[in-house]
Image (cartoon, rainbow, N blue to C red; front, side, top):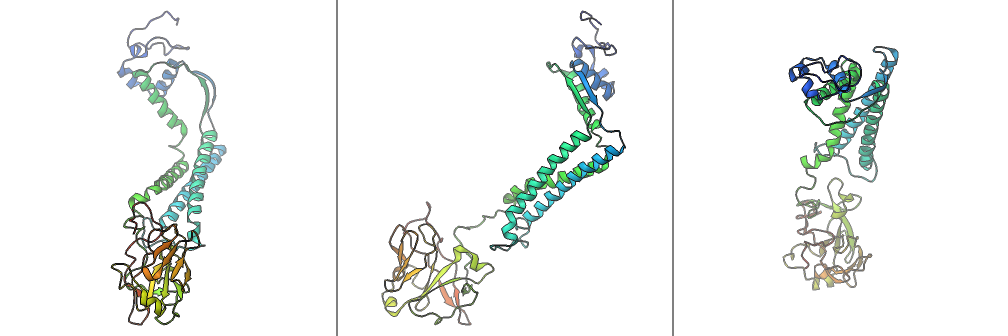
Length: 371
């Protein structure tokens, strides 16, 4: 066929003649003719109309051959381990309590809780790496390889039909339909990786910041005041003028920094001049008062107590709080008093909280009123 030849609509357009095709494909074939053609013929016809020149074709391993079976096992192993790693990351993530409130890590300096973030990251990263390894092995060892050059041109209905046939042909050539082990491992991996990638949305399903986490602590009505070793405290256990750091008697209470509290027994002369803040006159119990251990300036622990001056000192920036004035700041950069914990004793004579702090503990930020 020469360049000058033309073809009537509905003709073969020279598809049966070797060599490149010329002319407009939508004028050479009707939609009905294209619909009647087998996929393989559409694939070849589209390639020729696209001026594709095949330079080299490697059909891949022979179906059912030992080479193919070995490659399938390698790819399936990579996909399978990727799926297992993804599901393992999901289990670790679920174990943090995002979805199952009764299954959670115990907060501690060591153990599983300290490994939560490294485990999620390592398992997720391993899964994605193995996905890449599996895809590379699949592409190199199982798919046909073809070297071709092509001149691009504007699209048409003919292009859309033949391109679709090419895509379907690629799926057929992938061998997924007959390689069941590979298909199952791919589905397993896809499910695990898909769920793993959805894990960051856990906060939308169960919001970890619901309520008022910055304004509340573990203290509550009836919660005992205990020492670091867990022992409860009775009135009279401390000498006048002494300070004891106490925590709420709840799981993990002595590891919650925002719940650390100073239980102070005032001396008689301090009780005589004690002027609690407005509305907090009954927050103490006898000659005992309890204040947050967290400085309201920058969050440092304040536990240096000068009983002679009735002042609590912050070692970080030298803020000072007067315990006989409701722990109001009298020196340094702090501008807000230390929150006071209302206390009483239970039926057994041990100190307990009457409620949580009525104001947020810790540093002042923009929406906290200065007092």
